[in-house]
Length: 264
Ligand SMILES: [Zn+2]
Image 1 (cartoon, rainbow, N blue to C red):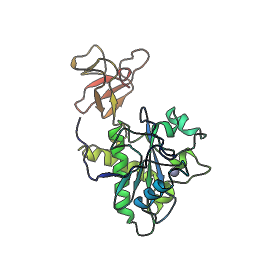
Image 2: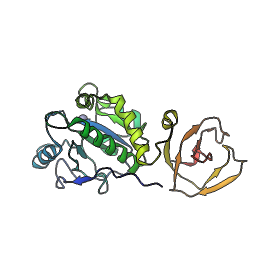
Image 3: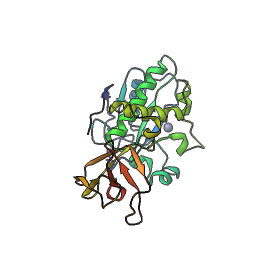
Image 4: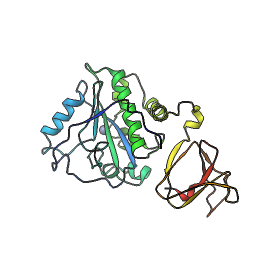
């Protein structure tokens, strides 16, 4: 498993636990990431975190990370300690369950973009893109599928991070593209062409699994993977040999294949 480039550091300033904003409940499995902005122009990452800490027993709203042009601050554990729950999306919205089968508060990391005022928009944007990519790497998420904007989950009430990104002259769509590129760049995969990037990803092996020369169980075995191992793929093949009615196989950078039924 290649190392992810540590372009920036994530500093800790944790909200005391237990409190309304940080009850100290662990996330069993991080399933996706919610992209937010603070909705509060000109407020910096440290100002937001200080406010959260000072009002920790007055309100329950929270998020894991705040990003501005100067720093990335983690106020609820995500990258620097076992991930805990934060309260950043209403439980009543249905979209998170439809998309990922779980409520955002129980399984998603919330990342807040700080913008406006004296915040250098380009520097803040670069840090935001990097930390989203880093989270995907850390939790084995697909950067092209597992990041969603708050507005998308709660369209009646929210416009973030679209509003904040507009201060950087960027769109939400651009953000999603840039995170995939950053993810590949930080893994040293810059050379891959754009169409291939869209289908690259990482899966965790669920059972003892053979890596084969062709997407077919009659072809030569080149390696045997054990449960828990990582398989990085660059292409998804939908017309491989069908096993249990599933003909999807993953192809790796060496042109070898594993059957998708054997991975998580
Ligand atoms: Zn939000």
